[in-house]
Image 1 (cartoon, rainbow, N blue to C red):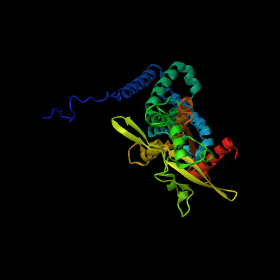
Image 2 (cartoon, helix red, strand yellow; image 1 turned 180 degrees about the vertical axis):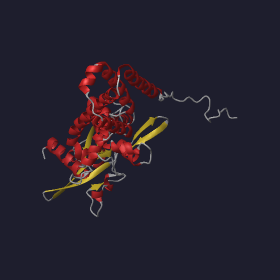
Image 3 (cartoon, rainbow, N blue to C red; image 1 turned 30 degrees about the vertical axis):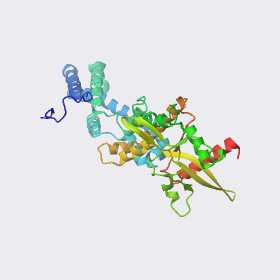
Image 4 (cartoon, rainbow, N blue to C red; image 1 turned 30 degrees about the horizontal axis):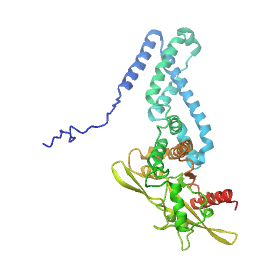
Length: 375
């Protein structure tokens, strides 16, 4: 029978352990909270008004507290409305003030009871004391945890920043750093040279002056949208008869060959670009090694896919890419071997008023040349 089980998996093939977390804790939470409410009402409530007070007031307090907290989030998010919501305050309110269906229904029901019945809270407090209200509050706190009433996109973004590298953006940064930059940039003492040596060989081969190559590092481009074209020459600003950027198969660094994850002599190839600069009536050329961060392009493709998670990924796109950039920059700054071998260039390509990536890259090179060679 080929030694396979009924499921089609060979018995000798190991699979990663799966921790199946079911819904038992939810059922237990429901039972505990409802049990507390029933017990409190049976022991302390002597009238319908007291039942309503015990069952409604603590929940109303929690709901009001949640609304106040959401308003605090809104005050923070307002300063980022352009970046997070493209200037749309309606989207901003949805990010911070939206509740899930069960929480919304619970809130409307609670306040309907609260305002429809005349509750004499001072008399009820004197009659039954604070203990039943405190127990009811504990019960509703459990219910709010089960209903996840605190969850909204803005809250999720804050949680992502507290996950110590476990969020999507930080995970992308670690993968890109350890799975790519650490492989292709530093010298390892074998036949493949580091990027500094390969740039020097490139300058000698192409007879390029040092001042024409002001940033002798790999420049990694990180657009806020995640949209990266196959080559810099494919950028929309280069469409025309006289493009400013030139690239060819000959204009590149020496290939890096690495045995990696079962693949022999995997090729890592860096493209060099020649950029024509017009200043004060004169034309000069600058050279650079630049490429986009493929991790953010993959993330963009995941956002545009038809998977169940795509919509949620799109909702948090700005924070994921921002976390990617910050984490990657920190990893580079903390690595003595790489900190002088790579530059990150983050740019907002979703705002039409901002300069395009080639203009930013050109200015970046000109500023570096001015600092280094004073012209």
